[in-house]
Amino acid sequence: TDSVFSNLKPGFYKIFVRDDGCSLSDSILINPPSILTVFIPDTSSEVGVGNFPIELKLLNKNKTLLPNIDFTCEISYDLSAFYPNNFIDNPNIVKDTIYNHKRHLTVKGENVSINNYENLLSDILGIVLLADSDRTSIYIDSFSCSDSNLIINTKDGSLTIQACVLPLRRVKLFTPTKLTMLPNPATENVKINVFSEEGGNFIIKIYNLQGDLIETRSWEHKKSETKNIVIDLNNYPTGLYEVMFDFSSYRTVKPLIVIK
Image: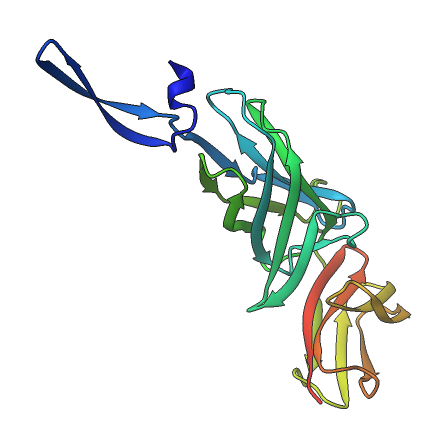
């Protein structure tokens, strides 16, 4: 009966039956683990869209009734493609670090229901940036959950970034903007050189890894102008910072390392 096997751990067991001097044996699988798939759906967006969601989902193909779970997931992607909102907008993000030109996020969830065919575990809200390529892979580096009876497979996703959706005859897709930031790593100051064929309002914002805004610079950029900005780093502690450049259709993030 079910009550006989309810306390056994999942696995194969051999059962022996003896009756009137005869014995029979057979193998049985007790409490087979559920096989689920955690994945990030492929998606696309225009540059500059805010509160854009990158979704983390779980596929329950058998549609079996499963207990709610706690989970921890490590995600990484090219930092020039997507800038997540602060921890208030993304309460499931418990860690946000940058190395090797990638952003690494740790996402956690508690008591999450997975009883549907396709389940939303978490979404990450942020701003779509002008990435180094039009398609950026989003990797699930690891996934663990509180239920040891579950076998979890993972599938990476991607974000396709569209510079513009208007026809070529109506607008240029991209006007060249060149940025340099030297030295990097820096100690006392960093010089940012900006050239653009466009005119308009240019904004530089510098954040620490906790998402706090440290400094802002803005100016009205003239067409085909080269602008040199010097950032004094004397009050910056040693660490890694993010420099966000926001100008018309151009938005990107570059890492800045400060060493004292």
